[in-house]
Every structure is written in C-alpha cells, then in structure tokens.
Length: 109
Length: 120
Image (cartoon, rainbow over the protein chains, first blue to last red):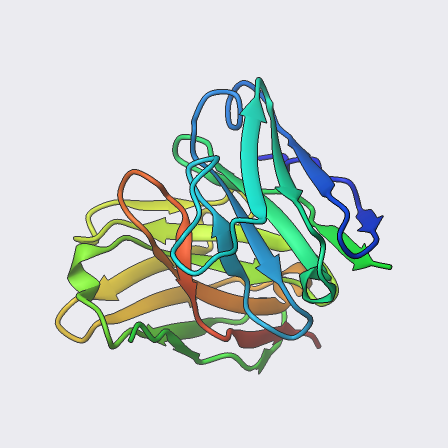
C-alpha cells in the first residue's frame, strides 16, 4: 500500500497561484474519481478542502481548485493568502483501502 | 454540530494492547461509515482502518492487519479501535474521522486525536 507522491514543499508570494501535484497509480488516483485534499495547520486536525476530485465543501474558498489527469491529481490555490500556509495532503480511495500522500508544506513568502 | 471525541491513548510497552474510543454526538452516527487515521510525530497522515455504517464491513491497512480491530456501537454512537501486539512504529496521534458519504469516501469531520506512545 504505497503512499501517493507529493512534493515535500511548495512556496509562493501573496496573490500568486500555486499547484500541488499528487501522483498515484492506475489502482487509485487513475481508477477512481475519489481524490480528496486536506489542509492541516500545526497541532490541528486536518480539514477537508476538496472531495471527489473537484468539489468544495460548503465554506471552503473558491480559491481552492481540484483537478485530475490520468494518475495525477492536483490542487491549485489562487490568490495566495498568508493563512493558506499549512500542510496539504491528498488522499485517494483504492478499493478496499485508502491512500494518503506524504504531504506538502506550503510556504507563503 | 458534529463532534468526534477520541480517548484511550496512553503509553504502552511493545507487545501490549490498547483500546481507543471515539464518541460521536451531533449527527446520526449509524448512517455513516467511519475511519481511523494516524499521524506519527512530525510525519504525514496514514489511513489505518474503516468500518461500514452497520459495522458489517471492516477494512485495514496492511501495516495493522491482524493486530488492530475496529468496531462500533451504534446504540452508543461510539467507534472503537482495539490495538494488539503494539509496535514502536505504531506511536502516533490517532484520529477518528467521519466518512462524508458511501460514494465520496472523503473524511469531512475529524476529532482532535488521541496520542498512543509505544515504548519500553
């Protein structure tokens, strides 16, 4: 049950856009449109930001955008704000199991 | 308001056992699948186990299969994780998470976690 692959870190300046990739396989990301993304601040529980690849829960800013192509899902955050600085995790259903990415630390410069 | 309240974390020796609980007031617990997700200190999230809404179906990560058992008591709106033959590498903050729907498989609510430390 290998983890999904995410970059360890990304950074951007306020107002810019960044994209975090999440690479899986044909058994998880590529097979199911069931990718979700979570935001986690230090010492806090994760928060659901995107589900079913592209959908945003109520209350999540429309600056957060999810997409997928083949075995790779992506989270794009536009108009970066200081409060976006956090760890981000992708997650994919994979049949009888669920896989998380290793996490990406987003730094807002 | 959905609440997930984990308890039962403790310091335990390798080879020992522990049972975690997750009280879930504020929503119709019996209608939702639930999961356990853990996070080792300074590390990422790792899915551990899941249980269907009725409790008839349970699923486990390879790393805990045969050692951990998840169950639920829908009459008490409580989720459990029985952890046996604990290893040092099981040291982590254990979260219970509510599954958004049977289709999405996303975790839309999380508890604050309970800390399990396995050490001699």
